[in-house]
Image 1: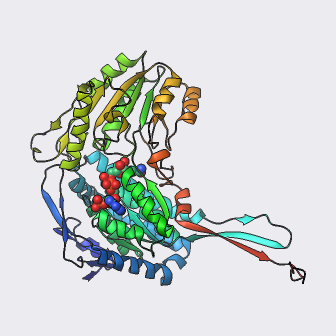
Image 2: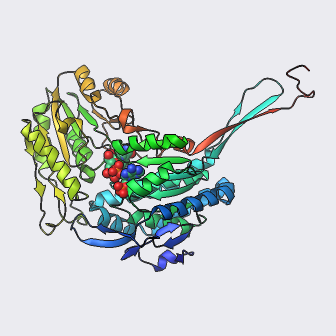
Length: 505
Ligand code: NAP
């Protein structure tokens, strides 16, 4: 057992053979001695062993978080002081940017440009909430005469934060930053496949001055430890990012204790390219929209609809550029598409592609497991474009979560909107058109939490991120996220000169 002290991280490399749990400000092994092995998906090599939390460890984490929340000082700190600590977290992350990028790349196999962007955004999240929290406040409300009413935003309490493997550090930042900004305590459950940077972030929080017990990080099995937190009566809120089926399961189980729940779930986001679009910009944006992060993005624009008048021109450019995408050494600046997270995900992706082929779809590019030179033992899939699809094919209806896009033609705006909305999901969407009136009209009719107009990017700190329909509910990355980590308390007072006697007795 070792306590994390000021500047200790400066002495210890982020790359280690063994990573501890963080419970109550201490780095600890699991109570069972069990570990998770984590591998580099680009090479298949073992990176490290990680302490694997048991239910007993999770109970200790709940106890620590509860104690920090119920009896600790963090939530009582003046807001400016909490903001200062958040800024310090960001400063430490910035000072160790390259190490964070490297560790994230080793754990996920993602390309350098993707890891750099995501680590930058994780840092900016803390800076954003350091600013946002200062303006987060209750209201003074209109009430009759001698009454006075105001509201306070009080932290909701202990929050279980369960995160996926596709953006391990960024998702941890999206969750930890707003929660601790308002004064909550958190128990972070990283994905078993990618626990490393969330653990390091937990250590950085402590180094920056977050008191013991406010941020706990416990990698462990989702089905066991994640579920335990969801059902735990002393946990007040669950913030979950992950797949839609697990999100549904969590929502059901959290109902027993009526926990506050936010769910950031899967997607099958459409991109609509109209006949008046800047075709080159739409091609470049659509390539990024699906192949960024190897398609392992919840808001990946994996359904592409192109107006019939420009279909041939668009597709010839889209296919030509897709063939130029480079895979291979993730640390090479020229690598566009990184690895797939593991063999299971690789099989899932290939299964969808093969089923589309069997159903009569046409593979225009890719369609195979890849073996980039020197990375033959890793998990890679060729950037894949599938045409000649119908809306009942699995490759069109399901979230594949890989570098695979399906493409269809449309005739007019009405059909484009109908096709875009013909899905159970509603996370992202994109519109490519030079006509601002059309873009606005279509944006208003798309059933999705995020609409990107002539823009390949889905979010920056400050822009709400979250879904409609079965993509979940609640918004992260924005000011209103702070409301999702607080309760509103209404305080109604009477200041009249005579006591009130409502019963007239
Ligand atoms: P996942 O399988 O649903 O797992 C997500 C997290 O939940 C992991 O930490 C997992 O732990 C845990 N978990 C699994 N079963 C659980 C249970 N019964 N109770 C509580 N926790 C449980 O998702 P994933 O494969 O890691 O991530 C990919 C999915 O995330 C995709 O669907 C993607 O669209 C979605 N995603 C959504 C957003 C968004 O903002 N909407 C952002 C990123 C990703 P283990 O790792 O131990 O299984």
